[in-house]
Length: 462
Ligand SMILES: Nc1ncnc2c1ncn2[C@@H]1O[C@H](COP(=O)(O)OP(=O)(O)OP(=O)(O)O)[C@@H](O)[C@H]1O
Image (cartoon, rainbow, N blue to C red; front, side, top):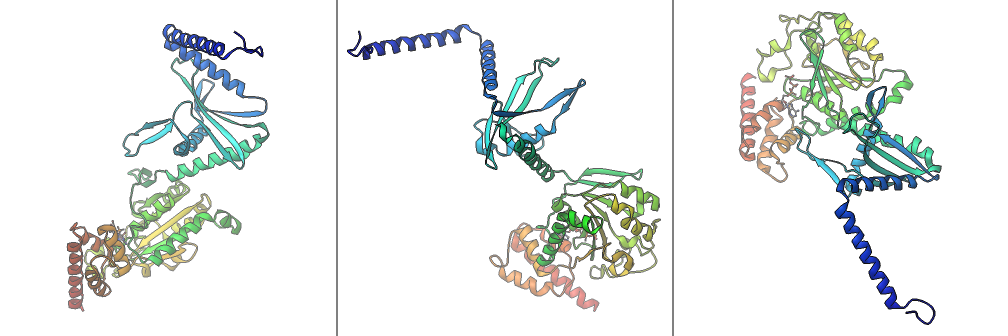
């Protein structure tokens, strides 16, 4: 039946539509029923490949980033692939509608990664970049189960240079910074053969944990931050990119803790050098040459090296309040290294064979040290780790007990403030006392008792 204008009538159209729909449904059913799933998957994959190829029109440029490539029979891992994967994973929460989730061993956090076939579009400096994550079976591989994983980065051809010279370096830079942040720190100590032995450095101490006058703390972190930013500056003025810190003060005031805080702040490895374990200047030189860039070399108790009495042995005969001020000639260190050997090496060869080096000397007897050791250029910043003061105590109380004098126990804090300025007490001693109770009030009363005891001991000694 035809309408007057020669067009098919509505009824004819409906009947044609019904016939076509029935035919398609039958076709779909037959496809699903008679064609095995594996053949279906194969056909889908081929179709997808065909679409992908047809997409690569002459106006587009595509960069293929393989996970690994085979060179002369060896499989080489491609770090650019890792960088792209990390970069895209960092954007997952914004774009992905499919994610893979795993929980790496010995870690609490879940790790998300890209699922196959994920596409991501990003506009960078006004240009659109399209990422595709593809997993396909590797037909060229001898190993049957070998999969080929790669990214395709597609962009308009006219922006090819931007992709290669700007966007890709940007992605790589992102990856490097991320690696740096997640870097596992190492603590290097001397092994029984006299060489460096590295273990994981997992000291949780940070500048936030450090009970210290806030201005002093800020001065230290500012100094460290300035130092690591000044690569070009050091080069321009012709000086080795190194900085020396002298930490001095009585035992238990946080010198070692400050070293840990510095290492965590800078993400630098730590080399802990016990001079008494080093045979001679030549060995010292070898050891220092083997230290790496971005590291902190710590020489604890430097006073023991320069012909001063052995501090540890002397400490046993000191009272708490006297610690750090006692000297004597009876206990000489058995060190076989000369101070001049150490200084020459710090200033000379070693400082010129590496970058971003920090050297830290710790002592509790600064006044007994050779002035040559302390001059700027060798020890650029002298940090006095003093007995605990009220600002330091507030940090301890907040970290250990989660209390502050504004809101909690103002009277107890007031009493502590009136006592703490009159006694020499270390952060270590107060921390130990606080740890005795989980109840803040009991712990604070314990601190008051300790301070009173110290005060009366001091009065008796006077
Ligand atoms: N300023 C501080 N802030 C927070 N905690 C501290 C501080 N000083 C000491 N402590 C606590 O006391 C413990 C011992 O301190 P640390 O070993 O850092 O002192 P030190 O000055 O290096 O002592 P030593 O000279 O005997 O090596 C640390 O583990 C830390 O818990």
